[in-house]
Each structure stands twice: as structure tokens, then as C-alpha cells.
Image (cartoon, rainbow, N blue to C red; front, side, top):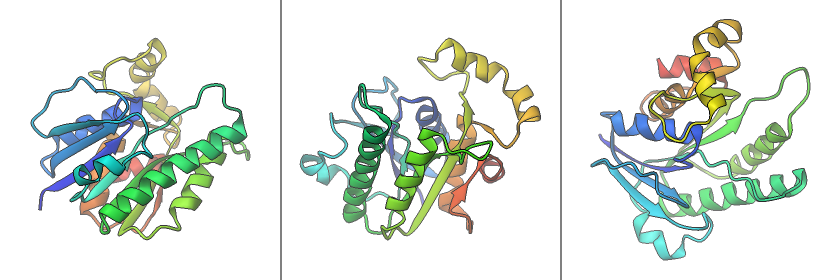
Length: 217
């Protein structure tokens, strides 16, 4: 069975890689990219839904029905937000969007682009927020729910709008994979792992760098 997926955050470093792998995949028949601006990518599988607010879906419900999975890759940072405001905003947005998508697609699989539990015994601000979002999403009844806990992610060479540091990360990926294999993935690995999570049985809900790489391969 060919799968129809919703992707958010398709203009971000990780989300764009996920989008490209979905467009390449024989398992995926349709992709709906939901976001605030266009990806400027043209593909027969791709439809874009441009909306200013991920929580304002009432007028678009008819376009969001009939999907098998949602790959939530959005990492929205409100302007001048402190850590507490950022956490509340991120949790509220992710939970609100997921809840609406679940109502429209009761058998949907939800993959959330999370953050790695931090290093050296401490949680970073992003990791703390990710924990809050994971806890909130876990209260919803999805057919399957996965947390992709990334740390460093190297982009595909053909991704657009990459910064100098992101291109440098892609260049240095082979060495970093050797030095810190449990802390780095490529955006292609994340995309492939999300697709594989839909078509294979995996008992793990939370996937770190090593599990993402293994599932992608």
C-alpha cells in the first residue's frame, strides 16, 4: 500500500532532508507539506499548504484528511522568547497540531522530531522542551508514536539555503560519524528512518542517533 504523509518544517535543515527522501521513496505516494512559506520544490507527489499558524486549521480540514502519517519536523522559535515562553509555545503548538491531525486521521502514525537527551548529565533547554512535548504527545492515542531524538544533523549536499556551518557539518560528517557516532546523523537518515518506521515493526518509541541510523539502513 502506498502511503500518504503530512510533513511540517519542510524548510528546515532536518525537515527538508525528510521531505526530499519522501519524494524519492517508492513507499510514499503523496506528500502534503504544511508550513508558513513555500519550499520552492516542484514534484508530482508534492502538494503545499501555506498557512500562517499551525493551530489555525479549521478552514483547511478537508485538505488534511486521508493521511497515514505525519512527520512533525517544525522547530519554531518565537521572537525574543525566554526559555519558559519558548517551552510553552513549542509544546502548545506541537500538541495542538497533533491533536487536530489525530481527530481528522484516527489511525495516523505520528513521528516527532525531538532532541537528544543531553550530555554530561545535564539537559539543554531544547532537550527540556523536547521532554515536555514528548510527555504531552504520549497522552494522545496514535496508532504509532515515535520520537526521533537528534543531536547533530548533517544536511544533504543538494539541500537549499544552507549556512556555511551547515555545509561544513556535511563536509565533516564522515569524520564526526567516526568520532561521535552516537551524536550525529544525516537528514537523509532521519527521513529514511521515519519512512521505515511506517512499514516495519519496531518496539522502540524513542530513537537516538544509533537507532535512527540502524532503522534507516
